[in-house]
Length: 111
Length: 115
Image (tube, rainbow over all chains, first blue to last red; front, side, top):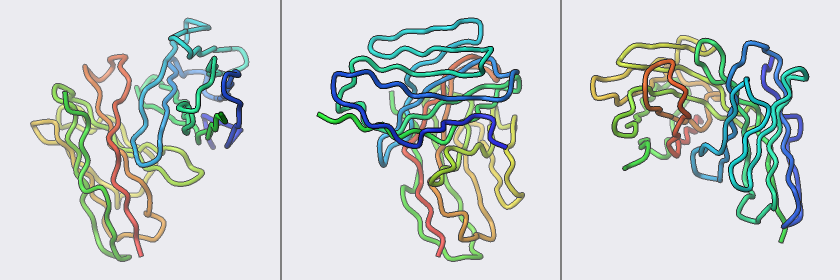
């Protein structure tokens, strides 16, 4: 049973518009959440994170929102740029300090 | 500072063989984790090592094993390879102690193809 799910395998957005990537989780013991970006032939790179005691964290064009009651987090990219085209993984950390990743969402930003 | 280095980048093996993958973490990082990435499955956690001790283990068969050396470098081994083991194997390191709140830094992976 997948504890972290990214239900949209792909997302296409026009350059300059907002990209919203979603992630749902089932384990209420997760206390820390992260987003990673992955380009082809490269390893994932850390993008932004949020602790479970917060509901929002912002870093430049990237904002992560956490809704604990809904067990849902989202990544907003504003404005989207063609260089943002990549696969995005959300990840959640449990009390054992183990990270569980979602299946990824492929974002395509069209010029 | 050099990033996480994984060798080799590509491997082709035959079913039934065994394979060893290598990972050198970022200098100063003492925790090393291994992940398997297959299409549609995201990143599946294999194991994590800290100071030469396995701290966590994912839900993989015993054919998958690993170890960490005193210089924090790590190896993972897969014995009796199966076609389903074809995947991208990613190594990641992080700074600090076992419970430290730091993100993982990934290498570019080893692409293993089993024929």
